[in-house]
Image 1 (spheres, rainbow, N blue to C red):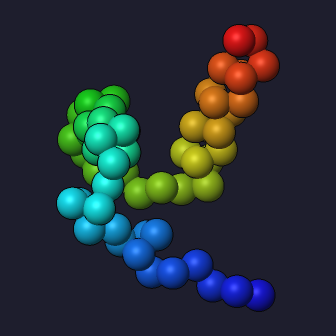
Image 2: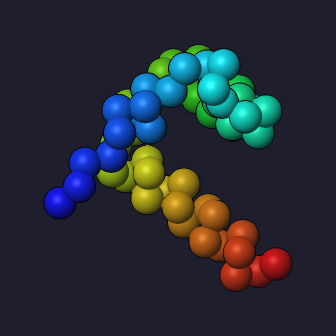
Length: 57
C-alpha cells in the first residue's frame, strides 16, 4: 500500500487555495474555534452532507 505524502496532512498555509482557506475558516466558524479532532464520526457526517447535496442538486 502506498502512503500519502505528509504534505496532504500538514500543508503549508501558503500552499492552500483560496477555497481551501475558506473551508478552514468555515470549519473554525461551525466548531466555534474549539479545534475538534477529525474523528471517523465527524468525517462521515461531513461526507453525508456532501453526498446529500450532490444527490439533490
